[in-house]
Each structure stands twice: as structure tokens, then as C-alpha cells.
Image 1 (cartoon, rainbow, N blue to C red):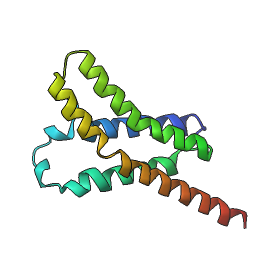
Image 2: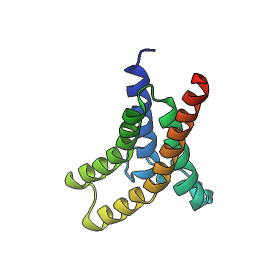
Image 3: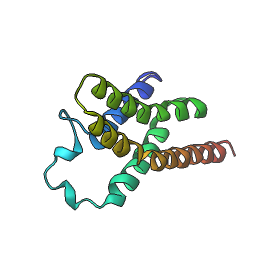
Length: 130
């Protein structure tokens, strides 16, 4: 796979996964899955975003700075999707507030996953050059 495919495809997959878990909507949403109340909150807002950030920052085939910027675009896509749904009338003002809070809570955990992935990439490059 060339570098564009190894950058664009994981980013799109990451954005769809983020939208599934953290953008409440009627199209694709984790909130519509039956039995999702059994999933602990720490897993939903901690483990899943950390894992997504870690995997995305490791899979991207680009430089370290570009990987951080591209990985950071995934939650920004979620925020833009929420604002677009609100502008289209899908959310009321109260629904926007709830969706906004639901999307913003996992961002620190996602950022931690991206940082861990970046540190792993640096460590792998350091050991490969030694």
C-alpha cells in the first residue's frame, strides 16, 4: 500500500469508529446497540478512546508530526458532525448540549492514546537505528 492509502484509510476508519461510539445519531450509533448498558463507563470513555488513539497513531504511515495532526482530526470530525447535525435540525438545543458533552468526554483519553502511540513510534525508530 502506498503512503496515501496508509494515511487516508485508517483516518476514515478512525472517524467512523469515533462517530459510532461518540456521536449520538440515528444512522450509526453505539447508543442504538441492544445491551450497551452493560459496558462499564470506564471502558466506553477510557479504554476505547485510548485504544483508538494508540492504534491510529501507530498505523498511520506518515511523519510523527503529521501523524499527531491527522490523529487529532478524528475527534474534530466528531465535533464537526455534531455541529452539522445541529445545523440541519437533527438536534434541539438541549440535544446539542447532551451530544456535545458525550463527544467531549473521551477526547482526553484519546489524546493520551495518541501520545502513547507517538512514544512507541519514537522508541521503535530509536531501537531500529541503534
